[in-house]
Length: 326
Image (cartoon, rainbow, N blue to C red; front, side, top):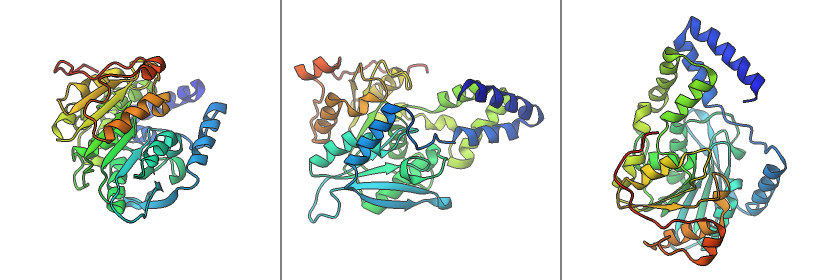
């Protein structure tokens, strides 16, 4: 938020929570779930959006209708062909959309696989300005119902966390994604820190903060602390590739370390130098994902010289079994 808007917002919540902490918490949740405008801002964002849209211009388009009448837009490449082919699902981060994932989508489609890419509600072509984790997981389930089981799922940031929440079957009554492999890029391992930071930003006091967090079980059927999936990644019985940059300023590398400590089924690949956003289109990252999806168990163990020149990629390793404090 701009400084003036933030000052006004803090002033408003200060007055509201003095009257009713519960009402303030409910209002804060609505604000927390409000998504940014889908229109790109700034020259770089506009150029990236235009380039991504051009790469997806030939994709089929679908609409998924969710509970409550909300909608999600879907792109599909290499769909409808006869014969068995691999099927991949791609999910984007908060404030992003499928067009910003176009480099990854193109790499996956070039293998001949059927590639399904989502615009979550409130993002891209889906319309609206509202999204929460439960709704994102419902969107993933709807995509699996519409297109069939996925061989692998790949998600960035919020989209990666949503895939993991889905994979562990966390939401009551929502079918988990059954993909054989998961790749998470710059993804959070839990959600509580976001609520804490948000409440601090808008000046919530303890009672209103508790009311904010109590909205999670109301809309998702699980407590906020249940959305800690960092330690669950190793228990889903499927290979998980976690790619993160230690210089990521939006999602701390501690999240990647927690995933990496979850068990032998999780591989951790550092893509230092690419931050939180450039990482999704970085050539060595795309190459590592492609190799992982082909079933290579040693992805990242012996990086070649071209990768070393682009960024410091530390080989996969087994981290000490500890839960980092966030």
